[in-house]
Image (cartoon, rainbow, N blue to C red; front, side):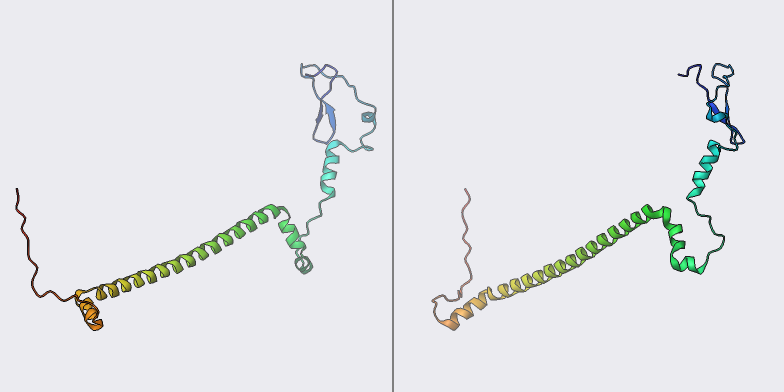
Length: 168
């Protein structure tokens, strides 16, 4: 809420401040502080002060790029000054990418090693099973017993009989 005594100031095209019309349509009174009654030549306007402060820290851009600027690093500083956070983000992404890729390669190497171990274990199991099958044949058992002559087990020369059980 504005009081009737409040005065709004507008900046017009010359950088000068002038009182604007009151919100209720009445012209505001020409009440200006003592400082504002001084001539404009002594005191710069607000717009001029803002422009001056904005330009104080800025260096004038040079129209030509010299070898000294490139070698000295001034060129890179001016080029990358506003891009620091983007560069940090890119470096983080690249670091993460390299770390994940390294871990994947280690996993692939580990998987290949384990597959080779499984293949070797299957081959060993197959060869052991084959050897056990050969040794457990009836003919090999009987030959082994005859060679040691410590058993009374003999080979059956008669064929097996079939016993028929009557059905009730």
